[in-house]
Length: 119
Image: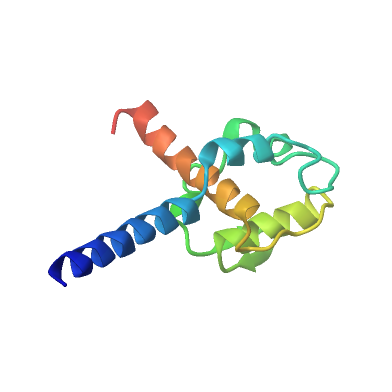
C-alpha cells in the first residue's frame, strides 16, 4: 500500500511538472511567431515595430500596458491589441499554445537584457 501511494504521488508530481513546463511556453517558437508576418493573418510581423524585441525588454514584468492611448490589463491583451491594431491580424486565444509561446519569448527579452548588462 505504501509503495502504491509513493508511486501515485510521484506520478502526480511529474504530471504537475510536465504541465507547468508546457504552460510556460516555448520562447524559440515564440520568437519564430514574433518574426513571421503571416503568423496571425496580418500585414506585418511583431518585429516590424519591435526589431529584435526592442521596447519590450520590461514587458514580461508589467501588469498593465499603455498602447496607442489604450490600457491593456495583461500581456496577452497587449499582444492581441497589437495583432489586431498594428498588424491588422486576428487575435489569438489567450490560453493557446501560440500565445504561451509569444509570451515566453517576450519574457525572455528581459532576461537577455539582464545578461547583456551583466546582471
